[in-house]
Image (cartoon, rainbow, N blue to C red; front, side):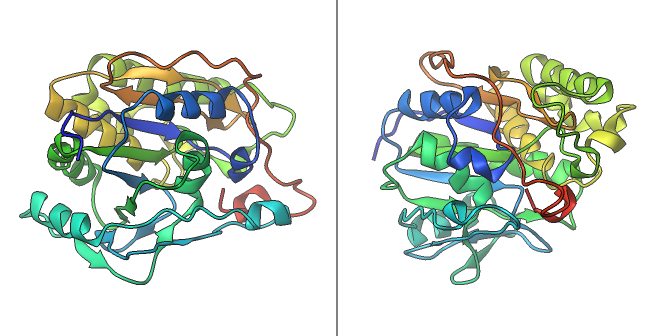
Amino acid sequence: MDTDVMPAAFLGHGSPMNALDHNGYTDAWRAFGSSLPRPRAILAISAHWYINASAVTAMDRPKTIHDFYGFPDALFAVQYPAPGDPDLAAEITEIVKPTWVGLDRDSWGIDHGTWSLLVHAFPDADIPVLQLSINAEKPFDYHFELGAKLAPLRAQGVVIIASGNVVHNLGLVDPRQTETGFDWAQRFNEAAREYMTASPADAVGLRDHPDFSRSVPTSEHFIPLLYLAGLAEAAGSTTDVLVDGYTYGSLSMAAYTLGGASRPARATSPPSAAPLPSPDVVPPDDTNA
């Protein structure tokens, strides 16, 4: 096991079609993964495992979950056959005590919030992957504090990747805005950047921002950012911007990293994120993107 302190990240995943695309965002994810020493494991906190409990996957072979609608068959054919690590899952439940986290031995796996990133960052799918659920019943402070409790894992060779979107409002997407954000989305995204790069401990305060309700109409895509903020607070550090931008007006693709020997190489592909299905096929709110 590599005992170096491993980096952590929050990656804005956007459309699941990013799994099949090559653009400035996927370049940045790939650069992040290739900049790391080989991890013992990857612990992912995905917006798409949002349930009424705190749990960590604890199966030997987690399944690839295609939890979206209206996308091409090629996306449903994607598999990410990484192993799990039940022993590490048990360690995690001990590390975070007295916070209770249960062991999920058979219900979940690796959802698209995780594998759409990992197919770029760790394309060989040979590193064990675990997912930590987002407990929908808990307040923001709980998630920030749980993120901080995960900090010892970084010294045990575990890369922690939180996956969501700082701004995520599918009800207000504008397909004409492929690379820009609405004014309110930009204001909120920029406020989040200020917190994450200067005072991550205050990131929970974004809930009081005037543009919060439009930028975060539901919490599941925002909460993963609080896990990285908690990890940064535990490290007494701030985070760096890995890549930033917008798509469809109401989605932020911002990504942040914590730690690492050097910043990954800059993306070279066009910045445009992969698309959502046509609204004529399925309304954006129904895609589960």
